[in-house]
Length: 254
Image (cartoon, rainbow, N blue to C red; front, top):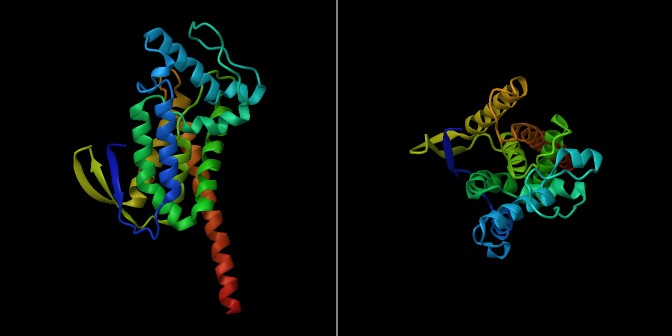
């Protein structure tokens, strides 16, 4: 998307504590990981750091072949030792708090910071937390199903944040979002247009990569973005339908 969302005009009614905690957790995990230059305890040499990153990603990232077979994937990096084994089901959740570099982290946190508070306010903290975690888990599993024999770890909060965007499209599509178009021009855009464009772009890229896998290498898990978005939208629809029906019954009583 040729733009960076800066703020949403929806006035939240309380501090979005869950969103802030999620952002803090993602930042803290990154700073404590070998991908961060601040984590000096992983060694200062280039070779040491590369091997530390390799072992870390393979331990906490979600590897499709491990999720479906339980077999530990072999690292392609010639490093001494093997990464410690982690229960595959656990990596479905740990992987969504890992990021490959600072730009990966920043891009995800910007979207969570702008859209997360709105969805949290509309759904409530408990439902919002569940939506975030379930969307991320479903996105990871769906991505793994597209290539169950893959041995490349999946990391990043993109699937969960895509779920937040899908929920935003359902619960607050009327808002307007100030966006830096082409990264320089601030413009107020309808929330539905911005989020809808995101989904369409991710879907087109996902289909393109699926149909023409040899057209170009990519490290972006478009499938996780698409399925996370759909999962978030579906869960938000379900929650709103339940709340609407409950509200209707209460109005009948009173």
